[in-house]
Structures are given as C-alpha cells and as structure tokens.
Image (cartoon, rainbow, N blue to C red):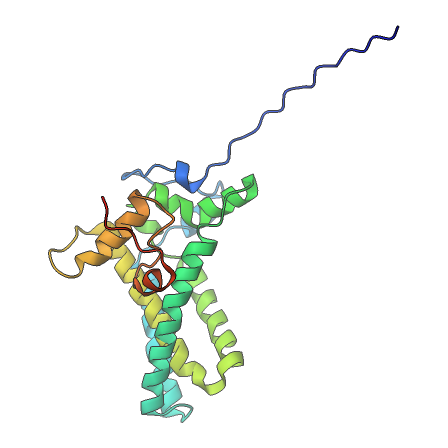
Length: 224
C-alpha cells in the first residue's frame, strides 16, 4: 500500500496593490516619488512655469500663423475654438482612462500612483499640480508635430486653442486645490472636483469643463 503525503508549499508573500480607492487624502505633506534626488526635485514645479509656457506658445502660434499667412483672422478664431474644444475632450479621456487606469498589477499600480494617485493622496501639494517645465516643453513640441502632420497649416490655430485650454485647466485645477470655494457661480468647479476627490473617483473627470461628464454620463448625482 503506497501512502502519499502532500508536501507543504512555501508561503508566498504578496504585496498588496495600492489602488486609488484605498488612498485616503492627506492635506499636509508631500510624497517622495523617486529615490534619485534630481528626479525627485524635477517632479516638483511652480504652477506659473508650465502655465506661462502654454500661454506664450498659444500667443506665438497665433501670431506666427497669421503674420506668415498660414491662417487668416476669421479662420484663426475658429481653429482656436476647435483646438480648445479638442482639449476638453482629451482632458476628460486622459483623466478617466489613463490617470485612473485600473491598478490590476503592481506595475500598473506604481504607474497610476506616480502619474495621478499621488495627487489623490496629497491633493493640497501645490508643487505637484502641474507637469514639470521640461515635460511641458516636450509635450508642446510633440503636439505641434502631431497637429502639423494631421492638420497642416491649421496647426497654428488649433495648437494655440489646445494649449490655451491646457493653461486654463492648470489654472482652474490649481485654484480649486489652493483657494477656498468662491460664493458665486464659479463654485460649481470646486464642488464638481471635490466629488471626484472625496466622494468617488469614478465620476466627475472634467476639471476645466463639465461638458463631457454631462455627455458621457459621469456627472455626480445630486443625492448626498
């Protein structure tokens, strides 16, 4: 008679994945994202730097396109609005599907936390409310080449509207997290974004605009 005994398998220690839902906001302090002091320093920035880069880019793009005859005054205005409209959609999509990518693995969890989860944990950290200037310049250059390839000479109007929308987003986002809600119609922005941070992160993805939350159906319910 043969007897078999099951060998006990060694216990495997599983590191829990830190999901956005498990993050509790801390209103003081800042997280360390990188061990390298240079990278860590570069991950912080003053809001004025990236905002200024986008505003200057918008002005130069419009000025160059009009003075060089690539776009006319009337078309420049229409292209500017189109670029701004495009940004509102990209803002929503990026926030919903990239910044809140499901943390289904340790690698994804680390990516999500570095990109956006750190902001949910330290929403009052003023130095991490915008991308660093070096990344801002890279993103602006990349947008120019993408829009130039896609839209031709219309790039000068579309890019201007797009980066203006980006600058507005940065300004609104900064104001929401740094200043108290105003007692006027602007309070809707503060309330909307607070729903996303403190109620559930599966709603209210628009920051500079609630347009796509209305269209796609991710507006917060009015019930408390």
